[in-house]
Amino acid sequence: YYAIASKATILSADEIPVPEVKFEETFSEKWCDVLKEGRAANAMQACEKFGCTAEELDAAWQGATLVKFGGGFYCGSVSVKDQAPLYVFNAFFMVMRSKFVGDGVSIHCYE
Image (cartoon, rainbow, N blue to C red; front, side, top):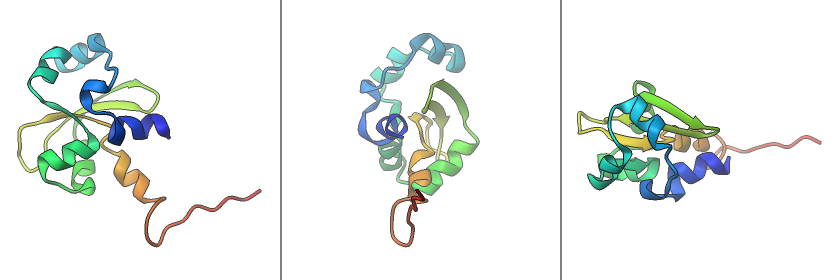
């Protein structure tokens, strides 16, 4: 869970250890160029940049070109509201988390 959360909400894009070769193979551009141009974001930052909700970001994620870099480590080329796309990490996380954390929801443990 932490591996997913950290890339979605804690680490900024420049702090995420992106496998550069796999990134370039998937998206046909260099990770260093994307960083220089400010076109990468974690999920929380993407919501701010796009001016969207977590649900809108998740809906855009569903139709995005995605790559899995490792366990709990995904990146997608995402666009919301016809804005220029960003490379977003784990954009699904905040909607997934809302099913377990917040008003009216709970987690039960049976031992």
